[in-house]
Amino acid sequence: MSESFTHRLLPYDGVEGFLEGALPFLRDGVEAGDRVVAVAGPARELLLREELGPATAGVEFAAADTWYSHPSRTLADCLSDADATAWQGRRLRILGEPVWASRPPLEVLEWQRAEAILNVAFAGSDASLLCPFPSSLPAGVVAASRKTHPETVCGSRSLANPSFIDPWAYSAQCDGEPLPPPPASAEALKIDLPDLYWLRAYVGDYARRTPLPDEDLQRLLVAVTEVVTNALRHGEPPITLRMWTRTSGDPSLVCEVTDGGRWPPGTGYGLLPPRPPGAAPSGRFGLWAVRLLCSIVQIRTGDAGTTVRLHLRLPAVPARKAPTIDRA
Amino acid sequence: MTRYTAWQARHTLVWPGETAVEGVMETLWSVRRPVRDLRPGDHAWLAYANEDEQRHVAGAFVRDGLLAREKVIYVAGSVKDAVPGVPPGTPDELLAFLPSGPPDGGRFDPVATARAVTDEIDRALAQGFRAIRVAAEMTWALRRPDGLDLLQAFERRIEQAVPPSTQITAVCQLDRRRCHRAELAALRAGHAVLVAPDPEFEDAVLRIVRTFQPAGLSLSGELDASRHSVLDQALASVISGCGTREIHLDLAGLGFIDLGGINLLTEVAGRHADPAHLVLDRVSPQLRAVMETVGWNMLPGLTLGAV
Image (cartoon, rainbow over all chains, first blue to last red; front, side, top):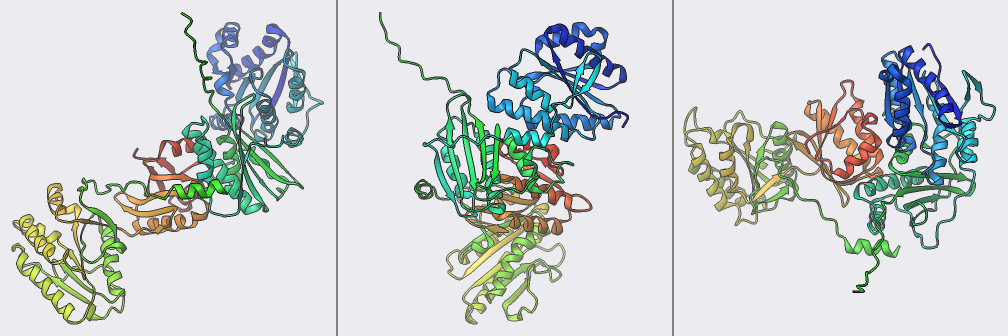
């Protein structure tokens, strides 16, 4: 492997600043024969195509909203792209500006965590990632980006980022705040039987009163079964399932499993995909897959026990039409 | 807890619809029964796909009878035919073997064969047997001149003897590979019961049944960690028993499979030096969505088969 993995931050002001950092990155890649991917919205893509000129032919463009669909999915896809490209003897080079503005806070947190964890996931690969961050983003997002990127691009050079912290430490910081308590309306079920058939019946029954689509219900059932199976195997009683729907902010169905045990350190929390695929023990495979199956997974483990909270986004249901009064 | 028990009271477990695995339309008035659920008076039909299925189904019928000290009457073409399922040390008086084929090219004699069977039945009753099993492998008869007509005549005689009885159970077997579709349909119509293999496993939540064409298992109900070991065993026996490298799993009736279960499938597929291939047939859109979310690259050795 001729080059080592790089994950650089490109802070910029305005279009000029963006192009100043992005164009050399892309052009160098095309010249070096790398597989070059630019993840961008439609306007950015147009701009880059114009500025790149003939080099455009060597750049693949991907739409930002589909590329950044789900932190774990995006990470897995990038990793397998890097593997596939390495097989061809080439280097993968990605210019990617995550979608920050439209995301609810919980999702922003997970994307930031993914930015940190990918440093671990890609270690040993020769991929090169450049993440442009406009200075117009909220201060918190900019500050977090300096903790999750080992280097910052400064003109034609790249400098070590003094704020960068260990990815696992960063991930632990993401989970520093205690979870808000479940609402009083949450339904609770104590789990004391190893047979989870009735548990799924219960979850299914609850979920069918929400607009959750069938396929997402199946994903939820698989995720809940996995988390409860883990709690039964490795946790401590009492094991309790709670369910509620979040109507404020991003509407979602929440399913929480608590138990009295504490996870040992270094479990990885399912943040890294099992590699090589299929070879991982089922426990790790399990939690990784649980993350893929849910919109957001929150985990807290400590002396007070363990909580795993699964969120599935609910489709927006058109608000009921107010009755119209015929004034004619 | 109250909602939980309310659910339990409202729903009773119902197995999803039985599937017509034989590729022939099942007649409306026939019922499908595993070997172990056959009862006296049943005149049952088995069109087997291969020796494995014959051993599995007819063999179980013979073995269960002999182990229960019932009389077993086996009809076959010639003395060279083996009776499937005979346990070692079976006393001679329990098993009557009736090789009924006339010399080469001769016509099948339905009257004589049926009389040999009823004579054997009468003898067994006189000896005090309370239950009698008749198993007849009749493919040879069908291949003789006027085979279909003569075999139907034989079947009518068996039909006169078995269903009114409270002591006799009969299974007629045909090798599907050596019969025409129309012949099978005609003969099958004379049987009110279709005999199926005993499930490899069955409880209130999961049922695993062997399939023979294609070789594999059909799963119905739900699979999670409390039943991984039974699936593992069933898969091991299919893989060791049928020699083919491609095992089919019919998942049409499977409402749920957990991640451990999916992982078990990839493990089984990869366990052998010559990796077996697991083909998942008739996977519901919901299960497919789960597997797609996990990612097929995480599931080496598994492929989607028939829809």
